[in-house]
Structures are given as structure tokens and as C-alpha cells.
Length: 257
Image (tube, rainbow, N blue to C red):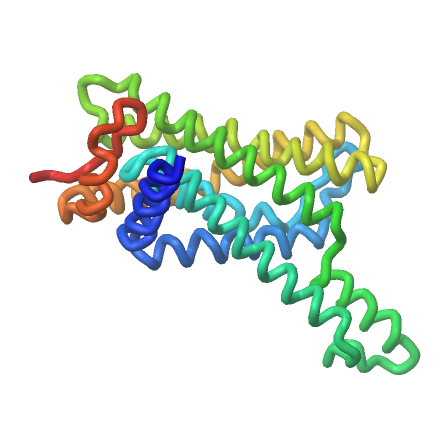
């Protein structure tokens, strides 16, 4: 067991050194931002459709996972997903500390409403336990679903697995299912239980959010494919590949020798 844990840790550390920092930063920031922006709902003009502003950036996290899964494999993408979740939890702790520190926010200086506005801002940034719980569970589950499905769909392409068509299909399918799962799990845990949403609202929120986020990612599909292609040409992660090459179930994309 000790040897196994040491091997896994060495593999993880090597992975963190191998993935370009820009992608990791974008991934972590998108996870943090979408959980913060989820505090604001979108007025859709109908009681049957409920959305929040988290959909503006959540597609970025799925685009990042698709790129990492294509090149490094689903295990690596899931590990980075958990790193992003851990970073979000740490930042939530920081926000909570800021919430309990005596003081006022700059935007709360409105005659007669200082206390109400300051309390609202504290609650927005400080968050509530059930929203943090719902978002964490939903994202962890959707990350595993997305990464596993992306890898599985990719294995179906035998003739040209590294082509644009294969990348688009595996990304669209995994993102659609993963995004729907993420939205639905969060809606059921948080919105239905604590805000009284109906089953129809939860379902339409998950479906509509999935379609919007999928459309956003579709705009950058060529960028994702370009990144994967360049990574392979540049042998990005060669050290990591050397460690996991013996695996039979989670073979990464490796590189062009």
C-alpha cells in the first residue's frame, strides 16, 4: 500500500509539472468563478425556466477537461478537476473569514441601507454551506462523467482518433452529458430542496444550461483541437507518459516521436 501511494503521488506531482500552467490557471479560475457567479440568477421571463450566471464561464472548465483528457487521459483530467475543487474550497474558506471580519464593503455606503447591503455582500461572497456542498458534489460527479465519457467515445475512433472529427464528437458528447449532470445535480441538491424549485424547473435548468454551455464550447472547439495537436507535436508531458506508459486502461495521447 505504501509503495502504491508513493507511486500515485509521484505520478500526480509529475502530472502537475507536465500540464502547461496556463491551462491549469484557466481551469481553476473558471471553477471558482462559476461557483461565485451562481449566486446571481438570470431573469428568463418565465417560471418554467431558471438559470444562473454560472453558465457564463462553466463551459471553460469543461473545455479544459476535454483538452487534458485528450492528451493526458481521464485519470489525469479527473485529478486536476479535484485540484480545482480543492482550490475553490480554500478560496471559499478565505471568503468566509472575510465575511466574519468586522467591517463594511465599499458598495454598502448607501444612506439608510448600509447594514442590509453589507450583509448581502457578506452572504454573497461568504456563501452558504448547502450551495458549497451542492456545487462541489455536482462538479466532482460531472467531472468524472465528462472525463470518462470523453475517453470512451474517443476509443471508438479507430481510423483517425487524432482528427478534428473525433475531437469534436468526443468533446460534444461528453460535455453535453457532463454539463447536464452538473446542472441537474446542483439543482436537485440546492434549488429544489432549499429554494422550492419544481422538478420541471430543475430539468429545464439543466437542459437549457447544457445547451447554452455546449454552444459556448462549440465556438472554441477548433482552439481545443489546435492545443491538443500542438501538445502532441511538442511532446508536452513526456515525463508523465514515461510513468504511466504501462497502463492498459488509461493510455494518454503521448506525443510524436
